[in-house]
Image 1 (cartoon, each protein chain N blue to C red):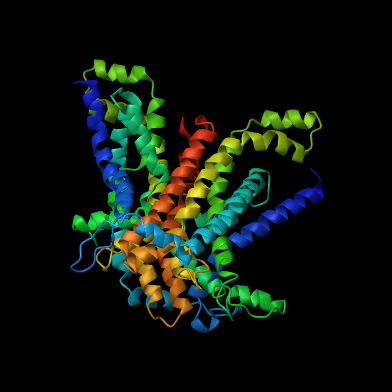
Image 2: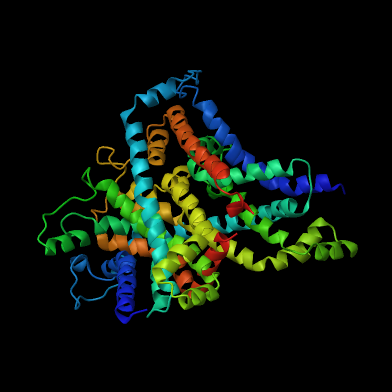
Length: 288
Length: 269
C-alpha cells in the first residue's frame, strides 16, 4: 500500500479526536467569544468585541489575573528549588533515604481534591492543626482561608507541597545520570561541594530545570481543584484564579460567551509561553 | 564532608519529610479515632473504624469506585491504541504534512483539555454525552504526551528489525504488533501508571460534565459528599478522603519502585 496513505490512516483516529477536542474548541472559543450568550428564546448574536470590553471593565477579571500571576510567582520558584534540594538530599547517602523519597513523592499520587479536604481541616480556625501550633506560641487565632491577606498564600503552600515531590523525581533521574567520575575528579582538584554544585551539577541539570519549569508554568494556570474545596475563590475574590473564574462564569452563571472571552486570555498566555519557549530555548532540550 | 554538615543535612531532610507527611498523618489520626479526638492528640485515644463505616454508608462510594475504575480503564485502553498507531506513523512513515501534523499534536501539550472546559462542554452537550463516563474520557484519549513518548521510543527501534519483518511478509499493523510494541513494553508500563494516576485524580472536567451518581468518579463524589451539609464532621470527611485515595495509595506503596521509575521515564525524553 501507498506509504503516504498508510501513514495518514494510522494517524487518523488520534487526529480526529485531537481536532475535535483540542483544535476545534480552541478556535471555537475565539468564535463564541465574539457572540452574545444565547438565552431562552434568544439566539446568540454577533457582538464583536463587547465581551472583551466587558472583561476590561471587570474588576474580578483583573483581580484573578493578578492573583494568577502571584500564584505563579509564589509556586514556581519555590517548588522547583525545593524539588532540587530534595533530590540532592535523597541522592546522597542518608539515613532513611528510601523512606524520605517516599514521603516527598506521596502528595503526587494523592488526588488534589482529597488533600485539599485535609488541608482545609489543617487551616480550620480555632482547632485546626495550624491554629493549635500558633496557639502554643501564644499567637492570636486567625482565619487563614477566610482572610483576604492569607487565602491565596494558603493555596500557594498547598500547591508547593503537592508539586515539589513530583518535580524532585525528574531531578533525581537527572542526578543519577551524572557520571560519578566528575565528582571524584572535582574533589581531587580540591573543589568544594558548593563550587561543584554551582559549576558542574547545576549546569548539567539545566535541561531538567527547563522541563520542570515548563510543567510548573502550565500547572500554575491549570491547577484549581483545591480552590473548589478550600476557598471557592473567596473571600471577596482574594483567591480567584483565571481558570476558576472561567468555571464560575461558565458553569455557575452560565454566561458562556463571557467565559469564552476569558478562556481566550488563558489560551493567549499559554500560546505566548509555548512560542517563547520555542523561540528562546533550544528546541532540542525538550522535543527530540 | 564534615560530620556536623552531614548532621544538619540529615536533620533538614527529615524535617522536610515530616512536614510532607504531616497532612496525611493528620488525616489518618482523625479518621481512625472517635469524633471527640478529631483535633486532640492524646496517645491513649481509642481506635475505631466507625468513621469509615459511616462515610461508606452516607454516600454511594462503591458506585463511584466502579465509575472511576471504568473511567481510567476506558481512557487507558483508548490512549494505548490511538497513541501507538499515531506514534508509529510519526516514527516510521514519511507522509505528506507529517511535520505540520506533529506540530499540531504538540499543541495539546500546552493547551490541555483542562482549560477548554467551556467549548468541550458545548460539544458534549451537542453529542448528547453529558453525564456519561465516555464524556469524561473523550478529550483525553488522543494524548499528545503519549504520542510523543511512544514516537521517541519507536524511533530507537533498529530499522533492520522492521525490514526483516516486512521481508517475512508482515503488514504495517503486524510489524507494529510483533516488533515495536514488545520492545516498548517498559514505556507502556510507565505511561500507563502516569495516565491512571492522572485520571484517577482528575477533578474539574469530571465535575463539570457529570451530574448524577451513575457517572460521577470518586473525586467528584467526594466533593459532593463533603460539601453537602455534613455539619463539618471532620472524622467522616477525612475517612471519606482516605477511602478515595486508598486504592491508588495502596498500589503506590506496593509498587513504589515501578511508580517512581515510571514517572522518571515519562519525564526524561
